[in-house]
Image 1 (cartoon, one colour):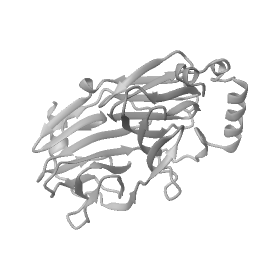
Image 2 (cartoon, rainbow, N blue to C red):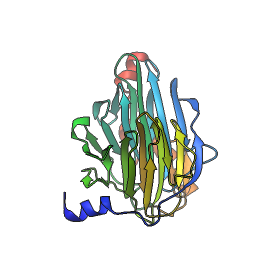
Image 3 (cartoon, rainbow, N blue to C red):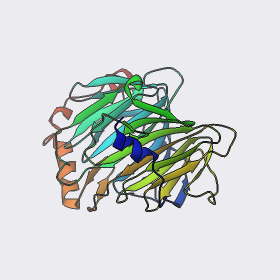
Image 4 (cartoon, rainbow, N blue to C red):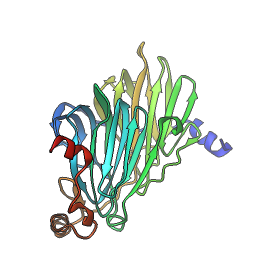
Length: 304
């Protein structure tokens, strides 16, 4: 750890971010029988620049996300329990298990499936991050990291897994096309966190387990499945005043400030670009060439 990064992670925040809005993510059905709790991308919060969707998902075979396309953004899948197999029309196939990460840049086009790879219930988070207009048509790219290789740090009752960005002096190796930070924090009872966030970025907290106080000691506690949108400021303060561990993700990103036109799994800047994307997908051109005769192994085996 460098002296500068250590000082950055230990400095006192002059202006902590407060909780501006709070949502409870309620279960809904999505895909082929999957159960998701959607907090970003719902009718009350269509877009939180640059974030398009945040789902906490639960899959039990044969439910899953069968063959479907994407264009114009990135998907970040972080497994909490069980495992999911990913397969795409380029021949890329892999399985991510509990604690593993897949950061997929769909760019100009991907068709893929995400299906349970184990018995029982598979749980995880999927975040959609918008791409700027000059990156929407780049070549697709994958970054996959096993749990054992995700950067971690422990200090003063706080454990962090650094998926993207830097926390407690520890940096992630993940490259983010849209500047992004993504941390998985666990606070023991009595622990107090101060985490810097670039002042120009949007940021939110999503609580996974336990109960915590965020932004100010005057704030009411937030429990599991709640999304907290943070105000402007230098960073996040969080306290665990309960008797059980508190686990949450902190995500921040640099706003793109561009128009957003979305049609399901396609996210572009104009309606004309969406119309062109639909034509490209239906005609299997301009990034979707290999979709013409492709079906995932899972789709073939289940005849879906």
